[in-house]
Structure formats: structure tokens, C-alpha cells
Image (cartoon, rainbow, N blue to C red):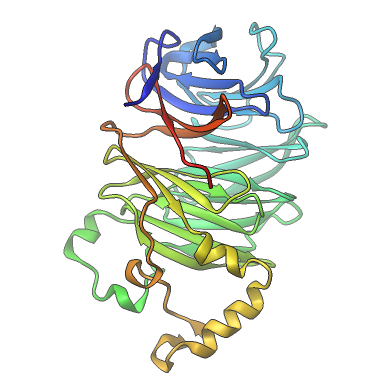
Length: 354
């Protein structure tokens, strides 16, 4: 049974984030923002102006008292020591913001919105330094750890894109609909009605491995090598869309949450961790070992399927409600997964140790 954190919201919780000191922030519909201490008690509450839904909350990685929130087309910077009026506000997006990300040096903030735009704000100069774009709603954007100028994004155009802030154009883009393996065979009739709209991204602590969750229920894991990325692994994670993916800190353990009401924990370290030291040699080795039918134009066409990779969840939580957001924190020395859904409470489940 999950523990429940209640009393912080009156409407559906849409987003979560945890700072380095264990303080949890949650944003909900109608402008509700709440802070929670490690015991699950509300530690502060604020009603943001205009009562727009709070769609993303993210703490500064350098200063745990700074909290960036998106509500409607606006980004507000709050001081969690005194939840009052925002200390700064940015209004640079033209449509509702879906996701915020701050790089690890706290120098750039990226905001992805419904128009497909990603506005990158220089936090020192307090102005937009880059405007990047998807052709449809941009659902997720994440800066890569250890690479403060590099970020990945995805959207309902089924594109996953690697960017560098020194360039206005994408370094590399993959269309999930075109990214099929030979083992997939002909496209099932139902697939036409369930395209791989990309919903969520998470980058592992190493900065080179990232995961994408999509509407077709599949979880895809990519490896960045230089200015491009390749698909490392793909497996059917959920029976409905994957709304959330989250790599646990310092590990290749991946949490996923779905529209099927399940929260799953996957150990992909055997598939990606062992190749981390030399991805280029690993790719060459896999090319050499692959049969001729799997090679096309010098590229490896096949990607590990469920059976080949042996990817099975280490933990399956039947949460029962569509998952809006997942996060991870440590309570009394043990890891916990926090789950936000259509309700006004946060569910808390214990996690095994990596």
C-alpha cells in the first residue's frame, strides 16, 4: 500500500520535483503550488497569479532555495524560504509551457511549450539566448548532466532531438515512427491509431544515456556519441502511453509511469552500463557480430528486442490511476518514488536499492 501525502492541494497534481535537501515541490491545476517536508506534511503553499495550471516545477541544482515554476505562458522564480510574490518572472513563451529544465551550472533555463518552441533563457543576462523549435507540441526538454551547453527534447511530432546552445540547428534528430527494427515486422493495424508521440525524457547521471517514453507504450533508450545519438535499447514498457521516465541518480535504473496506471522499475545497467567506457568500440563490435541482414549502409539496423535484451521490470506497482508525474526522494535513509496522478494527493512507494 502507498503512503499518501494529503492536504496540500484541492485539484489534480501535475508535476513534482525534489531539491538536494529533500524538500518536495508539487504543482497542480488552477495555480496551486505546495512544498512538502520529508514527513509528507505541507511546508508552504502559494496560489500563483491568474490561476493557470502549474505544469512544471524545478529546483535550481546550485541553490536549493530557488524554485522555477511554469504556469500558463509564464515562468516564476520563487524563494522557498518565503513563498510570496515571485522574485522574478519571465514571459517569453507564446503558448502554455509543458516542461522546464535548468542546467547544472544554473546558467540556462529551457522552457518547452505547446507551439513547439523551446525558449532558452540566459539566467545571468535575464534574456532569451536561443529559440529552438519542434513542428508540433514540445512535451519535454532536459539539459544533459556534465554538459551544460547540451540538451535533448521531444514532442508530439514524434521527434527526439539533440541540441547544443552554440548552434541554432539541431545536432541530431530521430523520428520515432521511422525508427523501426527489422524484428518489428509489418506495422500492426492499430499502430496507425497509436503513433509514438514522445511524452517524456530523462538523462542518466553520466550524461550520455537518455530515455524516452512514448504514446505507443514503448520505452526507448539512446546513447549520445559526439554530435549524434543511437538507439541502444527498446522494449514494450506499458500497455498504454508512457507518460513519465526517470533515471535514478547515479544508476542505470529507470522508473517509468504510464497511462495504464502502472509504475515500473527497470534495471538497464546490463544493456547500457557495460558499454559506457567505450561506446564507439562497442558499436563496432556489435556491427561485426551482426548478420549481414541486420546491416544496412554500414549501420546497425537491429536493436535489442524484449526477448534478446531480457528486459523485465524489477518492480511493478499497480498504482491504478493515470500517472501525471514521478519523482524520487530519500526518506529515513530509504529511496521512495513519488507519484502524482489525477487526484489531489501524492502517493509514496518504497524502492529497492540499486
